[in-house]
Length: 294
Ligand code: SF4
Ligand code: SF4
Ligand code: SF4
Image (cartoon, rainbow, N blue to C red; front, side, top):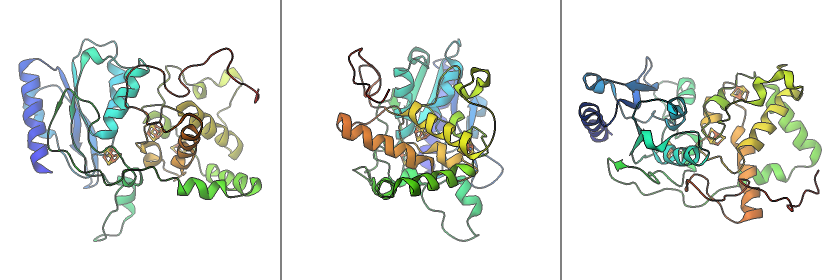
């Protein structure tokens, strides 16, 4: 990975010195060996902070939301999932492609620091769950690219875990999800890190609306989980960040993947985050749409 790291630093230096970018978003080493955290670089003198290793899991595209009305020209390093997130955010008009530069980085799969922290010393930390199923490790779109493309290790969606839940009867399903969401502490880390969960005003910050409360209990938590899954349906780019950061190990991707499976069944095979405009599933409606569920 060090060649990519050297290329990252050289590209960042050139962009900042030339003034093509005023900010570069990448990753820096944190306090623990498994911490590779997002960093914002504004000076060419600081580019040696940038690193590239197997813990650069966090999606950087989400941070561009903070720059939508900024004068800054922001360059980000972007793995395959980051570029799908970037496309999705452009499609949602939540970031400004005019003030951003995407530097694509091929990815060989990342590891989850949360899992690493629990792994005994000397044992191998496995690839992050979402990365095991990643079909787009190479950038799907970018302004410039560093490194060489990798061969994707996964070419088809695997819904076997979703099918196992679908095979349960209704009571067993209800008991399963109640148990999972009983663990949720409503920290909203899954929402905050998600590039698809990008509303300006989130319903879960509007407790006066009467739709939901801040109570942390199995019922309210499940309402939160299901609502969030509906809100990202059709826009989830399968980066797995929501589940990776969940301190309570709620299997959030299982619900996301159920929606992805259903969308594929109803609309044909669909891959979120590959386009920046046009009509995509659950992205438009017509007055004559069926609504027998209402
Ligand atoms: S989801 Fe794919 S592109 Fe993203 S970190 Fe994992 S392997 Fe890399
Ligand atoms: S719901 Fe999870 S997997 Fe989907 S885009 Fe958001 S963080 Fe990524
Ligand atoms: S990250 Fe986990 S614990 Fe926090 S709100 Fe989401 S599901 Fe609940």
